[in-house]
Length: 250
Image (cartoon, rainbow, N blue to C red):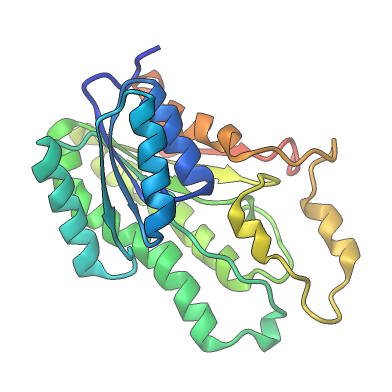
């Protein structure tokens, strides 16, 4: 199925995890890709995988928390492909700590990448997406929908992303733009390799964020939702969040 034939999709956080899986999924469906990340080796590997699937791919090293870098990256994408049909904001970082011990520097860094970065990319891409009557897919989290222990900054950033998504959906709907969010939970990605319980943490609190069937699934499950929302199959879906969490919050 070539849902992305003649479409150009920009994906942040494309070097690994859900970003890589989304790039591969969209590449397999005929999309041209402009991929961003701060990890050169992973980004190159993703591009190679997508090219092997037949996609026209370009990459750029970009820290989305830098507004100038975000603007330059979007302009480079449009210069390379001539248009932009979809922006998928997937770049993100995570840190676990007791809230009363969370360093201000860590709080600000997580919000700068996750929330500010999403805003900067949306702001830069909006004129081009409006010209193409395109769409935005933002990566939120089940951490935006229910209490997750030890993730104060991450949860706040993902809640902000969800609110930003709703705002964009309404503000620009009459101009043909759609904006939606994916809220993964219990999805295994490299971001989980940094998971370490803070000293003195109550392990029982983990049960509230585990899927009822006990199965942690791969990033391709969230990528399927990203591809759906970015495609014309979701033409009548706007201002929505889709949970991909195996029923954890049901």
